[in-house]
Amino acid sequence: MIAAPAEMAASRAQAPVASILRQAITSFRQSAKMVEAPTTALPAYVKPQAADWGRIVRARAGVAAVYFPALGTFLSWPFIAQSVLDGHMGQL
Image (cartoon, rainbow, N blue to C red; front, top):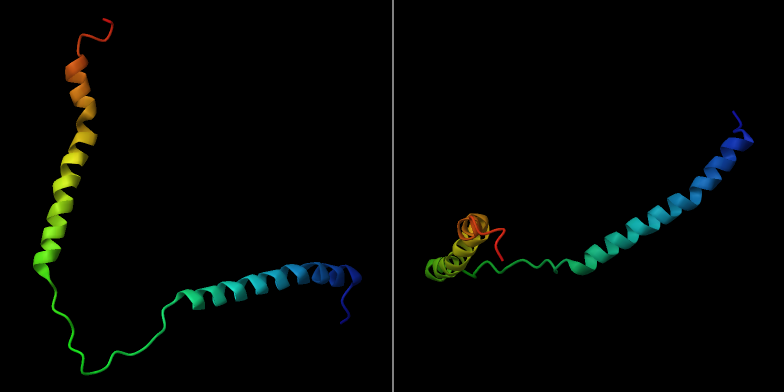
């Protein structure tokens, strides 16, 4: 079966789009290959490092010491403002 001229024109119109899409996918793949780290196997004789739990706990405690008070202040400021400004909104 021979394709109609309208079908041939439609396929020719889609060819540049497919070509651009193919080039975009190829360039994305190449950029991903440049970003990823080289894959090298670790030697078998290297022992894994033990976790330094003391350092990890100190770091997390330092973050929590700042995070939770800041979060509490941020979430409770409407209640603090209500108690400070209660009855004094119209007075300047």
